[in-house]
Amino acid sequence: MAAVSLALELIPKDASVLVMKGVYGGTHRLFEKVRRRSSGISFEYVDLNDLTRVKAAMKPNTKLIWIESPTNPLLNLVDIKAICALAKESRILTCVDNTFATAWNQRPLQLGADLVMISTSKYIGGHSDLIGGALVTGNPALAEKLDFLKTAVGAIASPFDAYLALRGMKTLDLRMARQCENAKKVAEFLENHPKVLQVCYPGLASHPDHEICLRQMKTGGAVVSIRLVGGIEDTKRFIARLHYFVLAESLGGIESMVNHSATMSHHSMSKEQREAIGIYDTTLRLSIGAEDVQDLIEELNNALS
Image 1 (cartoon, rainbow, N blue to C red):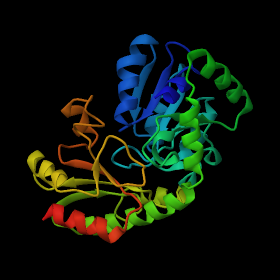
Image 2: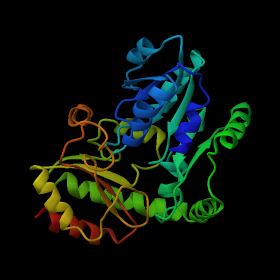
Image 3: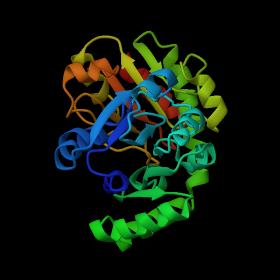
């Protein structure tokens, strides 16, 4: 979150920020419950793929467009090239949260983004043992500003966390290739299961943003989100039957994890706010690890039975 906060230091007080609808709960919490109050920054949530609506939402004081693609947890995608081109026409900064994809799977800077934010806690570290974030830019002037700001506000990783991130990057290619391959197989299995109401995975042809995925991503990623048939008690029973999948807030480690969005990643939002963006009491986020995929599929099948 320090990296997200640092990006906001680039824009003036009382500026307006356009935000991808369905943004990560922690980012929403920072924007709405901290920065709106402390900085006077306003945040407007829009469908960034609707360029007509984005143009209408732009104001003279709009200074930043915050893009998250894929989103957490529903894996909605944004046409990064299109929205960045539109932003450049009005000299508006763009920042892409690339945590779910990583640079292995998606290159926002090459698609026109000014900044890329990534949580190094997730796939960069890859072993669920560090906390950190990073901002990346190809713009020397922005890099110089960020270098000053990170020191001024103390948004600097500890030496050991930095070491762990560098260690994790050495195996990023190996891990991402295996985990993304596993995720597609898990998604294909779940899509055909009668106890699963909805499967969200950009690599599936049924995903509404599948065409965007084909244009700007190498694979559909290593996260699969599902909505189960039934209610909250059915969801709790499903989670309790899992063993390979660790119940966790985080994602991106080599071990598989399950997250109950309504009570974990998006708990700071009201039920009405969550359901307005498609997150229900039976929504689960599965971070697919590097285990044998048949073991994962067998466990999911048993938990659903």
